[in-house]
Image (tube, rainbow, N blue to C red; front, side, top):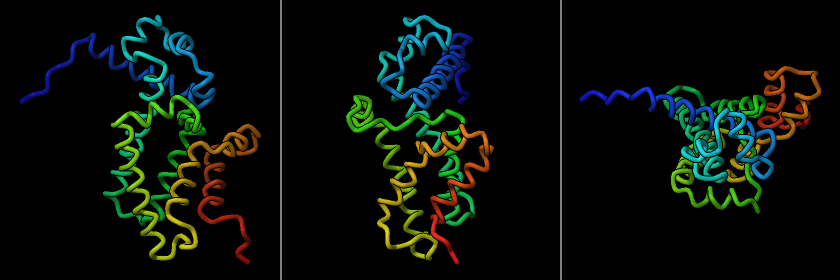
Amino acid sequence: MTEKKLTFKQKMMIEREKLIIETVNNLLATKGYDAMTVDEIADSVGIAKASLYRHFPSKEALAVGALVDIMKTGLKQITVLNHGDKSAFEKLKIVTQWAMRLKLNQQMPNLPSENSSLREHLMAHENYMDMLVTMSDSLGEWIEQAQAIGNITTNVEPLCILYTLYARSCDPVLGFLKSSGMYDDEKIIEMVTTTCFEGIGSKS
């Protein structure tokens, strides 16, 4: 059975939705959820607010859609790595660097604060929560594998390490280093990766 060919209108709707998601991701990364408005999303995309609501019925739905999209991309990264021959420790580095690269390019939304209404909507979104559990399970498995062979200290609980790696996706250090104008993105990623995975204690 061949897949039904999309109409021109359907293709345009899909492309517009991608643009909306990209715009929301950028605004969530640069301004945050509370400061972001539906009006500026519509203006940035170049459509009327009524047209925007045909894709997403609310500001919360826009933000959730953006975070779901990022989660899907992250899970694709994990799937590719699981089919490769990298060690668990290297896989953790690669995923962390992927998140940092998105952050530096203003494509990684900041995580919502505990008192944000967005957090409640995310917790109630079944697909997002399922993907978050899948990602956490995969990263947690890599952490335990790396600990088992001595690549990561066993003095720190795997859950703490997992949350520490998640924090790198919204680490303000990345922005501070970039705004200094002293380093390019790859140098910043290299330095922050070193502090995250090797620490700052002297080896001598």
